[in-house]
Length: 588
Image 1 (cartoon, rainbow, N blue to C red):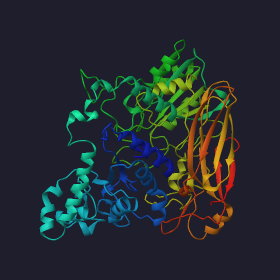
Image 2: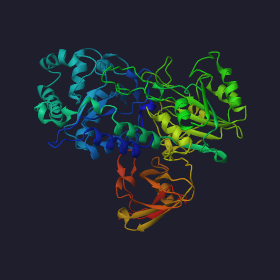
Image 3: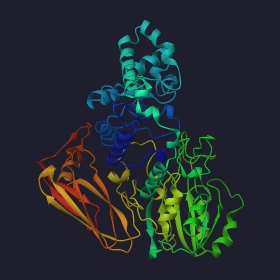
Image 4: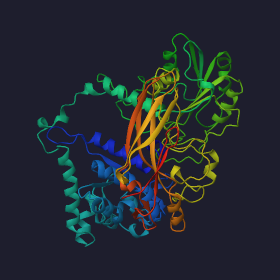
């Protein structure tokens, strides 16, 4: 279910979640929330296979270094309404009966009113035996385990309403626990105005005409523009010139619904007169969008091959179209709907290469020797291992770009837009899955996981991304004052197209500190501390200001899970500018 996540970095994830929650919990003039926002899946929920029986063995180091920081950041910065506890357990305790996680949320993070509700059926799953033997004997014990440990609302079953009073009678559960859960539940309902006069709540007056409104469509398009990543552009193939003959081939050539992730809003193509949950006709396909962006040219589209499984007999249908094209666009990747699912709830992939006959199809098309643009549409990462000299000239990672994704891709390919993003994850070789075990939750074991601990050579590193123009950027330390130090980055557009650049800021321990900690616990290679996007006209320069005053960005997690700030050692601030600027810093 990586397609439901925005990336691999805890700081980035926490920042994303915090802003998402702020938007969802927008308040009206009387302070009433638009809606309650809950964070999921809390936490370390990583496997769909036998998910109700998954017990994650996680060290305190990894738990506090990787699996909890994003939740803490989102709560401290945006006061989310609560969490959804996940099916899995951690170190022998199911998450929906975990006093440890509840204490973390309500006491250590100060979220005393935060509500915890179960994933669908998770309380009932406490009775399913291994590995939760001590909870499985009766509904009374399952209900008591959940409520005693802070799970307030049960979803997917009715054990609370059926057995809570009996559990109190038998002394397994106290009435005070039920009152505490009821209190937290009611508080969240008060926050969204459910007990107010509806006429006084601004959010009750949102008209149906706001669904699919122009400003919302524009925002969707904007998100797609900033989310797609240009990985390769050999010989400056992009931007394409209008008037060329384009052949769009591959299973995503005519995708509409499959441009979305698995959980999408039913109002994608909302029509008040004829509401439907299965109308995706308003979503342009990649073939349609490229044709509209290239009105004086000729654009054809053929699927050629299925997403997965065997050949449906149409692989060679693309031959004529490819032969006649000036440029071939390979529309490949994953999708989250059709059977068999490739990435979706209840499914795990066992490899990260292109599935089915897609690799053979890519090879078949590349052998024509045409200028080729490979567009990847997927959620979870894909390992792209091409023999040297046999790669597509251009590669675009579009993820699931949403209802306006095809339009954003087409506009970017033809240079009408130049707003590319940076990779929020590390793209690894397909062989990586043979080097790590899926049920090993250690970040540093073996070759390591994520950009913070991976010691191998990625195909494309976290934070990588090209542009259709060229930038010359340089960061300098404007003021030197420990945690209050400020940095300015000058970004000059040295190319012919206006465009946007993203600069990332990291912290990392000095060599001396790394050596000091080498025998104590794992140490991250570096930690993300900030990121800023800037638009720069061709030939002009813009300035970005950075500050990393959060001491936790320099702190390192020890084996007990505590964050330690090593003030007696030098730390390094590093930027992703052209010069990869670094600055030693002493913490005051």
